[in-house]
Amino acid sequence: MDNLYLIAAIGQNKELGKDNNLLWHIPEDLRFFKETTLNKNIIMGVNTYYSLPKRLPNRKHIVITHQNRYLEDTLIFHNIADLLNYCETSREEFYVIGGAKIYAQLIEYVSKMYLTKIADSKEADAYFPDFNENDFLKEVIYSDEYEDIQYKRLIYTRKK
View 1 (cartoon, rainbow, N blue to C red):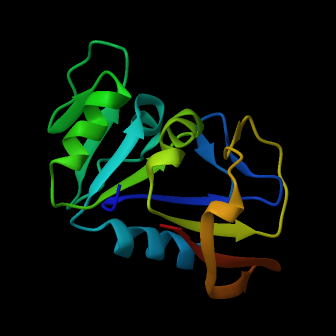
View 2 (view 1 turned 45 degrees about the vertical axis):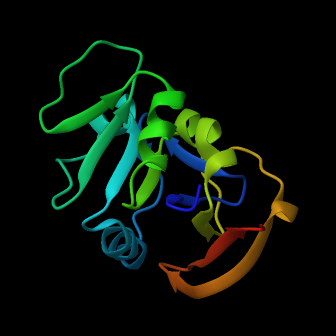
View 3 (view 1 turned 90 degrees about the vertical axis):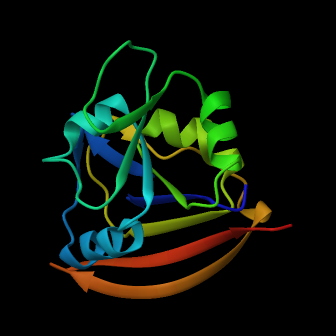
């Protein structure tokens, strides 16, 4: 799907988070996330929604959950098929922002992934899903270091 993307920061063992929190807080990477998703649709699971410190301004929040909930100013889908149909009929851009289960369910449909790979390992209870790197063209677009931890940002573009 040409308008569905994924964005994540992962550790060297594909760690995403622990106890519904991020493992790393790299200011430059958080700025990249903000700039990339600003004025876009962000797709997440309900746990990720509740983990946000506040609603992220200037973004349309979309939550996938089996629970019957009302979340103010949030579009809710109860299954992946309805979400994909909604994305497919839109000209807008959609960014999958987590958590691990949502990444795993949607990774096969994304056309691009923005992955920040952090050369560090921490205890985690949520991991980024395995995927076939041969399905993508890979390009390093940025690398840096923060507090002695090296990281690099890659764009994975799905091969046609």
